[in-house]
Length: 82
Image (tube, rainbow, N blue to C red; front, top):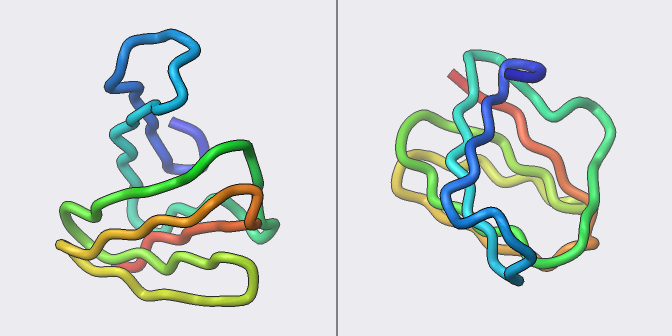
């Protein structure tokens, strides 16, 4: 767990274009103040809790049942919101 964030790969460990992860966030966890980028597309489904997702200059409060998708390299970050 890094910064209160645990990430587990759900798809086979290979160079496939699609990789799925289970990401678990501890209370008040964050990816940090700086936005991050990487290649590909990022998507997710929030199973429980709330997070603030920032993509470029847009802030989105997501709750259980909400989903998201955005193309990287759009800079992004997220913060758990209890």
